[in-house]
Length: 482
Image 1 (cartoon, one colour):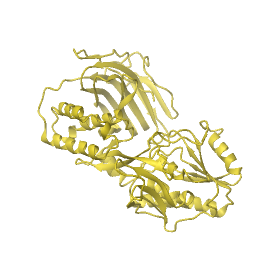
Image 2: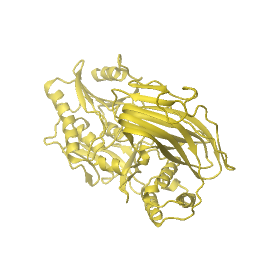
Image 3: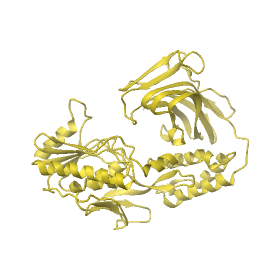
Image 4: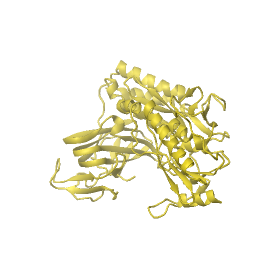
């Protein structure tokens, strides 16, 4: 992903930043990393600006809320102790149904990305109609860091202007520690210590020291994001690429709505091949889950009863994750009943409590079952028919768990490309401020107890599809008919 960054060079005896060129777009788009993306346009606007004579204007038209266009620049830094860095930018919006935001990747000296933040992760949502306002994104960096890749993005429909991006460092002189902050971060870290599969790889002595330093001057839980983001960065360094924070709003919405705009769909392909498309599903709401399950099962039933199906294609290439159990319950007629996989924690093995399954229309794991099921769970006419499962780098998290649920069946093959590699079992822990820590608490394995540590490799690798030719569907269809 490319983006745009501007940084003010500020000199300290212990910190240095590279000089940034064209930081307020006065020299048009020189030194900025942008690329054309369908349904988005960008330009330098001399009619609307916060300071100087120009600003960057980005407009989205006829997009979904998940489509976005980023801009960026890389900034070298040299620090010799842990510190907080603030990226600021003035932003204005007009009729924006989506979000404008800042973002930043943190890279270490081994050229490994060890941290990521954006405005939405820090509970800042910029949309609608707004006048020029300064927004700040906070990250932490220590002596292991040598580069920030930072900038902004626009998602959805509408327009945003960006101007005067700056990188700031301010030394905290207030050494007091708020009891509220201390209790919050202690509870937060205890969740990680007691549940994360990466806890033994964390240097807790160093972490506790750094937390005390970063806590100085913080007054309330509303200021705690610098601490929780620091902890997520430490998990990233330990190898955890899946744990994340949910804001209070996002955590609450997860129980009420499905934010994924894509919907399940089906069609009959040539030679009577049944095609089922299953996107991600981001909700724990019972009624919404039941609708999702029923939709998929009815799509399968309709094809199976109206057509003489010779084989099935299950397309998970756009499935970016969410709640795995409605996906599995919906696809249950094709997956079949029984144990489908395992969540393996530090202190557990392959057993009934660690498995996930599909039985009698219900998908669940261990003692926790899905509360929703189809009214009349469907069973396909020919359960031994071949099933081709399509995967891609976008297939992530619960999308990967859904793919794993098929693995081990003798009539199944996977086609496409290596998945997103978010193959850990995450558990949501609600925090005292209403936000949630979604923490990687287990490894995952298929029904044959094979663990997946770095995603899923397809049985047959195919190229990216395009509007004219979908190689994965073409190759999968040939296998189904032979």
